[in-house]
Length: 337
Ligand SMILES: NC(=O)c1ccc[n+]([C@@H]2O[C@H](COP(=O)([O-])OP(=O)(O)OC[C@H]3O[C@@H](n4cnc5c(N)ncnc54)[C@H](OP(=O)(O)O)[C@@H]3O)[C@@H](O)[C@H]2O)c1
Image (cartoon, rainbow, N blue to C red; front, side, top):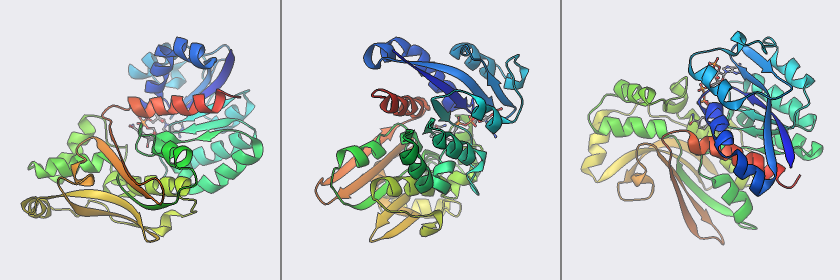
């Protein structure tokens, strides 16, 4: 049996869901993969807690879900998260803190440092990858640490795994996808007669909008996913500035109604075609693959030279598949170590 010593970075919806899954699937993970996860540390916006004997998963979840902060707890060690993390004997970080659009934030430094020290990293946070995917993969390669991030592109849809593991020696010629459930949902709401702001409120009410909805509506969340996907499965090394990004902020109900009259529906589409990387709202035929991706669905079509044209779609309303993907990534790293 291998004990994997973990730090949970962020105790929001994703990492709390992950802890619940790790608790429910504890016996299964031990039986099928010989892995036991032990959580030595956790962080939130107040700082870090540490317990060398292992934190109780569900007590921690309950504390956060009843409005508690980690700084309330006896195991609180202050707000110097990076220093404390570096002093611990860890195998793995589960990174699920908010995205920092400009720089990747402190999370990028923490990931760099961890990977250099041979600590594996599983990310739900796209920020460190958007700003340092090439560098982080290189550091991981040199140190032998695992770096996985399948949850960052379309949550539970294992599209990165399919692109890297299953399309062996294939060249991907074209990618088109609808990657942002929130924008999708807002446009759907607008086509039902709600205003743009009401669409955002509806997304917030069910807990699906990011902390800052402009990342979704401005097309940035979609662009982040496109960057991560293209750099992972196409062997390119693009930066955010290589993607032309137009969000849904300027979509009017009039445009949506016009598309409807033509049997079309507007989707925020990410594409790689002819060496060009784009995110923009496009009127798609309602019965086409992308046109049929509604509400909380996300999907991507991939055109390969030898693997045909494949269509991949996921319905994810709650972040359970996202959190499960983080567990999957961790198991893939440690099952043969
Ligand atoms: N939700 C999804 O379905 C989904 C899907 C794929 C990817 N993601 C990505 O996963 C990440 C987490 O999402 P989420 O929905 O769990 O977010 P969330 O519910 O907003 O939780 C964020 C967590 O990070 C903590 N935090 C904030 N600033 C911090 C800092 N500087 N250092 C350490 N912790 C900090 C927050 O602390 P407090 O608890 O004190 O506020 C909270 O615990 C995001 O990057 C998101 O884009 C989310």
